[in-house]
Image (cartoon, rainbow, N blue to C red; front, side, top):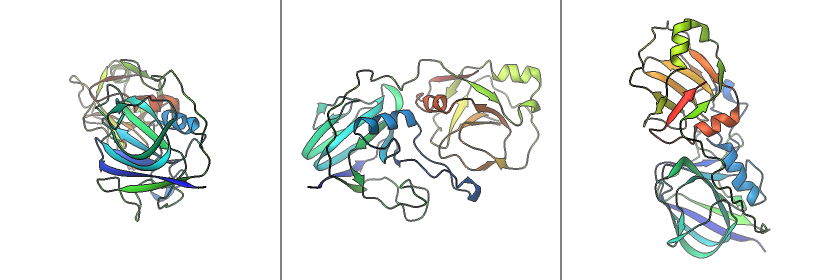
Length: 283
């Protein structure tokens, strides 16, 4: 017999987003790819519940906010350490959890990492556009206070747990492997070496569109202007204020030089777990 667990937003915290496999294949018509900022952590939450790696989840940033759970179902939480609690009881992360009745789901600010993933077993009853329930297209509301979704399920997942709860979180002073981008040679050798010598700080204006990399000694390198050209997640654009590492909600074209590209998508996922004011070095 099918059952339902309803998730209702009371407060979205530092930023809450519905994420799934996104909308790949539509960048030519101006639609960002989307998807989770950390696909590894989302896939693990879904794996624990026996779901498709790209099944719909909730991504929260910096702090998880406040949510009402009503009904019966199973959930799993992965990613950042936000000390999630249900009715005041601290929850295990990277484990299949069971819930029945009404419950208040809350968190503290992230102690390690930046983004957390909440998977709930079953089918999320949400509107879709171009195959995705993520915001960004007409008809799909943003997650805000009062937003709600019913998750209907038929088959319960068996209990699973993973003791390595920090497996998707970055080390301090994270080093991001990169390769030359299309405009890398616009920099002279000295400028190239300088750019790769900085320990950049993650700026507080960073979001899913891009990580703003800041350093007090960075100076504009006087590169020429360019016609807006295609960009994608993992592109490092060099602006007069410093580099921007583009993420899942990145625009499809940009007018700043594309000096570097992230070598491995998994490393890009790690970068989007680096906390505000923490450090990233490009290598």
